[in-house]
Length: 348
Ligand SMILES: [Zn+2]
Ligand SMILES: [Zn+2]
Image (cartoon, rainbow, N blue to C red; front, side, top):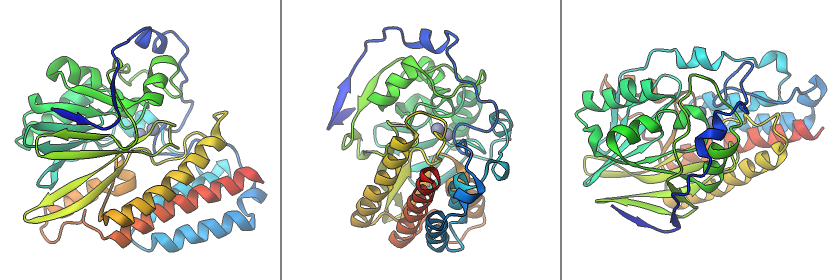
């Protein structure tokens, strides 16, 4: 495999998993780490402030009728009583949808709640995220790949989009069985090694530090290059990826956002993270316009409706994953405006 760009190998594993199991875990009392809200209580007056309402209205306009699932991001600006979600255990317990082929070189091998995506290349597979634990890795990711005719032994790289257990929990299983390189950002490797901001007992332990990528890095495997785009906010080291998605003789440009929800409301650096999210959505909106990104994906089906779209595909017709550059711009605007609404609510 060839690696280009800002790529650093670091095999210094001092202390790694000991810290995560030392009792300094942050357990979730309720709600979920990744796709539901987990925020400060906002007073009803703050939620109704003109600034908050203006940004939420802009988000609703951008969402139109096809992107309404993203509007839940704006719920952070609502009073706590209106935004309680199911527990992470309940979310994990949902039966996985059937695996599916979204493009000639992109396969969904995830669960109902959290996704895993396999990018196939001429020299192996790049897996995006590892789900919650070894059980998921074996019975959802690996079993799903086999069902789709993919060989899990061909997994050469696993990109961990960010340091929350629903994305790294199955990584150790994959390393043990298939020996891929595990890729994450410096900030989130550090978080996985030192202080997990969320944890539940049913998540696998973090993988040992392996490869570090920075913004602009290119993961090249065979005939395929996946561009690393740092999108801090959800965590300060959240990785998103951009790549070509092929369908017959057509090539689409796909962007997979690596961390969507605002789950940092009780963290001391919440304003810094929210501002980073605002800046990330702004930057990627510009980048996506220039690259004509017409496929906008997530690592939670609740955000990109991947499970619904895969079910639609089995009925035939046009590929529901293919949108347009304009759809992608609107999705990023919904995310951006919901973040601005939340900032306004937190600033009252
Ligand atoms: Zn997360
Ligand atoms: Zn997540």
